[in-house]
Length: 130
Length: 168
Image 1 (cartoon, rainbow over the protein chains, first blue to last red):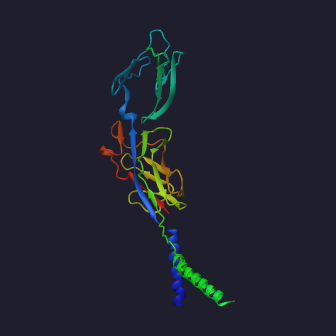
Image 2 (cartoon, one colour):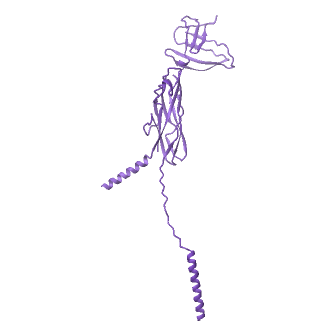
Image 3 (tube, rainbow over the protein chains, first blue to last red):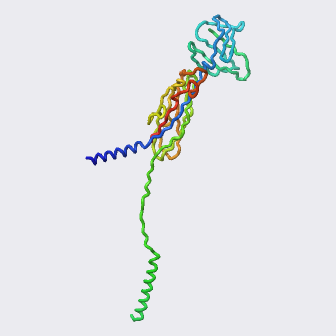
């Protein structure tokens, strides 16, 4: 009986040696960089008026970004309330490069990157309705 | 046979015997024995340096962010099978798992790590694998300024070191 137990013990030992030869390990870092455009490039309308056809100045953390006002004699359809949306009417000289939505608390900000295909700076008409 | 012939024969036999005795020293009898060469090979795997897994994330980005880096080499005994496992922190808990979910406590962003393969079979040479990572879109993270990292400043993480296990 004792001999049989010894054999069983030896068999179990040999099996465990074959199954668990060894374990190696190594550590590694997980580096994360996060960019928050809401803080690095926050732009607000400093002179926003509730009146239709108002002059709107957009001020960014890096300084004034743009002043937008109605062009004399041009149609300006204003509607109060709602999220601000900048409507761009791309001409053959300009090209839209995608868009994305960024949550800024309340409302939705829609962003467009606009650039000139021929590399020449020129005015861009932007209609703002609010 | 005459006496003379008998005498010649005796001389010849004596000469042959002398020659035979002389050649007996030049042709010693060969003998041989065999022996075993016993070798005990302890199989093992050597894990190389693991490069950092790196995420670049923009708050509330729509698409998921895939990590860069995470490459490593493992060198195992020829024909030795091995498996990989990931575990949080260090020293971690063997054998680890195929995937690892972590929320970085510095920048407060959740990510999942995975492996390019569950394991392999050693061939005596360095074999290349990698740890991948995915960070889901729509996360805000924590960052008081325009940009932050989990390796410096107020958002320095204390859980950004993970462990890879190789079981063989």
